[in-house]
Image 1: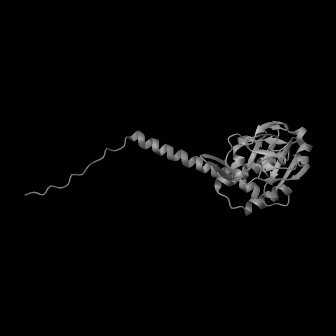
Image 2: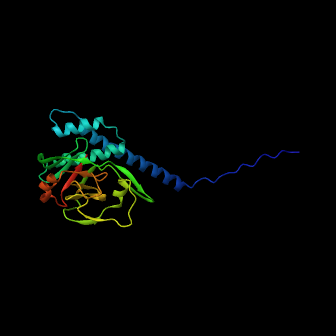
Image 3: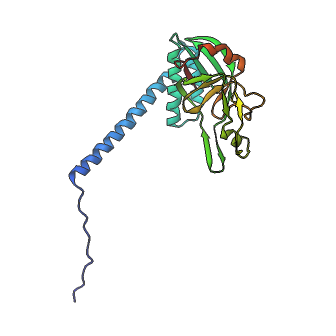
Length: 233
């Protein structure tokens, strides 16, 4: 009696066009990753090349980056913001720079510092209240101002109650300038604001945002437009 060998199932070979498509996709992915790495390395080379001829700002930024423990994505973000800031040093436009490590805000034109102020940086965090969640990230990079306001009446934001560990009320009170007298709006609801008034539910900087003394924002207020650049690093 002959013993039957187990049948072997044969799978059809993938068509040639599919193999070629996979090879093209792999090559494109490799090329993009290599290009991205080259861009980061080129920017890093500029910042990490120590020279007595380099401006003080460049050497300071290089030293700070050397001490940071960053992923490639975080490093790319830091590099973009700081490179744009260095380019602004050669221009003649007013702009704002916020150094989160030194906790300083500078209002500058080119290399000249028009005004410097202390800044309190709101901690990045995730807040929850019931089924609602708000996440505030650490903001870094270069941005345009999206607006400003120095007289507004609005309900206190829901996230403020979550920040204070309080339940959301059925009706939130409307408070004049509850975020602060001066508010400079940045993309994605981040702000630069003056301290909240005594009657506000907010007691300090908005998470992920920046709080500056009222007199300092008042001094630069007339110069702030939607064309004003803000560099945060």
